[in-house]
Image (cartoon, rainbow, N blue to C red; front, side, top):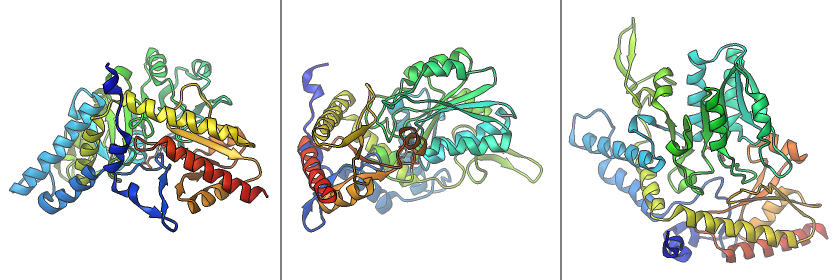
Length: 413
Ligand code: PLP
């Protein structure tokens, strides 16, 4: 790959995001470092959604008229775009959902109906987002299955050697986050999948924090399920994707019942629609799916390795500058990490850091980041988290660090 392909113009990219020009807190320049919570949308995505409502809005798969045919084609084209983005084998493997949370609930609920029974075991990790813990706890309660946990070390990496001990003949599924939202750790999911497959165990990958930062190819990973949210990759909220291998989706019963997911309904018996419609009950988020496809097309114009490299530079730079300030502890120092810097500061609560930074125009997130087991591991209640995206710059990192110094000085004096 030539060096030209690895370089992109951040300033040009920034111009595509109208919100980045917003002035906050008394005419201060906005520094948006809350990208792990949600990314901003480029103009192209905003325009696409607007245009859909202005010119094409109609329901899908009910093709009695011109507009409905058009909306259906756009919706199904969006599915094709997602299929290509993930390098899935077929569109039958792509199910539109509301987001990662709904996606994992879909898999957990559907998988538990028929494929889980009392005494079966599900393995997750200590660094999961609550949305990859609680759905499994719910199905475990209903079926009598048990949850087991791969621990993390103090750098915030998985202790992978433990996985071999955790796998038994009762293990029915492993669900693991690709990139941790509170630590930034990139997990060796390919290795986990290989190990799991040796024992015939399917693997779910939570890709919420991965798709916008590292290359994802579901065939190369050979994962059985992959889930992500549109709003974390420059697309709309309320739309997300479950990729599932056909062999599993075929075996799994529907998640929800309703319109579109059926072939034939009588009071005696209902037959279900083919994949992926079996899992898409009711009117979907049509504009959301079309907006997501536009976001993916927009994002694909950049070399993902260049994006990753750029964001790594920001992580390294921020980490280096933070370490120069006294009394700062970085939470999550994995060798392989991306896009996230979580930290705590002696004597100042993360929430005060967040509020203080906000007064300076810097938006970060504070709290447990829906990963309370991670907080528990480190013996803390919360962190302050700066998370980066394609449009962030080193200059913004400097603004953030100097604002932070000001905030710490205020609270420490
Ligand atoms: N998994 C991870 C790793 C996340 O970071 C998030 C959101 O922050 C989720 C799952 C849930 O995503 P959503 O709220 O879009 O459903």
